[in-house]
Amino acid sequence: MRNAICKYVSLTCVLIVLIHSGETRMRVEKVTEPFGLSEGPHWNHRTQKLYFVDIYNQYIRRLDTATGVVTSAYVGHGPVSVVVPVDDTSDKLVAGSGKDLILVTWEGDEDSKKVPFKVLTSIESSSSDTRVNDGKVDSSGRFWIGTMGNEKLNGDVTPNQGSLYRIDDTLKPKKEITPVTISNGLAWNIDDNTFYYIDSPTRQIAAYDYDPNTGTISNKRIVFDLNKINIEGVPDGMTIDTDGNLWIAVYGGHHVIHVNPKTQKLLKKVKIPAENVTSVAFGGPLLDILYVTTAGHNLTAEQRKKTPYAGSVFAVKGLGVRGILANSFVMNEKQSDEEKSDE
Image (cartoon, rainbow, N blue to C red):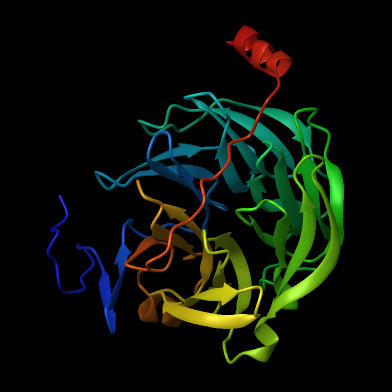
């Protein structure tokens, strides 16, 4: 059991950072031990559990926030970039792995060294020097998932090798935005008429008009530009609150930033005890806790010494805002029947 009143930082207790600003009391808590490249947090409101991935170690991980227990499932299909539950199921997850969208069977209560999976569709050709990256599901159950060039040994990514795809229950990927370099953060506003998107190296957040009935996007514009503010790093994963403001992880920047896309103003910076902040998602019973994933992958000895918690998941509490329920992927009845017959 973690000591709930722990006040001092150590490797064995929850890290708590208290920030006082008038009546506001915000705190950042370390809620998991460090992993590798932790990414893609998704709050399952039905089970009250947080899913996330460990990309290059090829794990889907699940945090029980009530107990602090993390269970893990190894996916033997390549890097795992994103995971989302399948709607109306208790043990089915859809994940981006390698160049494919796969269906994983995992209850989540125990570790699995070899989780069962099957490929639903190939997103890009086997000859492309790319892999899938961030993704989310829209209000109609369609999976939006992007790709990027494979990282080189020095961490560089070849420009303009990736795209953003939309996948509905026909499982036929439709290319929506191309070319991009590192397809990353996605979010829809509560009115479901605006789609926000990040291609990380641009250091910009783009907005599109969005039609929830057809899933089409149009009228691109830039609603926030990190090149115009004094902060290092690139925008990575992203989420949105019920006020319509964006929360953006800054990889290489030690921060999550809070942005008003209508006024293009920076509202707040939340410092995270890790340099490479990868993604964010609201969770908790009231959707008022911001869960933040970070990367401990490929760090130098100096970086590891400065940020020993890199790779951990953090919970930011006391923000005074709430998020929007995350969507689950919708599979059609035929696919569900086929899966049942496989079992």
